[in-house]
Length: 170
Image: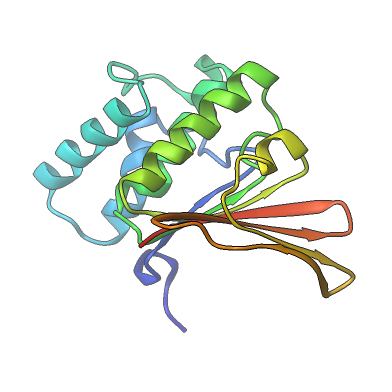
């Protein structure tokens, strides 16, 4: 079995799953440290990821000192720090107000535009409509399919009331 730090994907959880005893820097650096990356590379990568999610200067704060939207952006930065080819996002906007949810979706679309493949679960039809490619699954059966559009694609999987959004770049 491959250890998590060697699997090549990042994970963003609905409840952020940040380590409360670690600073923002420590949370973002965690996976890189597990991979045994050099300290200078870790420092540079953490700063780059925090700039990407618009949180430069937050390195020394703890999760309890952040808003929900800031915590989710730290979780996204942590998931991206190892430069994964695939980002799995389980309801990344579920605990956010509608404005922050749209901002997180904008960030995920920006990340997708940089070449990352994103698989996202959402119950929010507005967010699911942002998909370019959709597959709807109910009770294990494909019930609807919207074809692929060139260069950027998003697949939305719907199982009962859950929807998953999959985004990839070609």
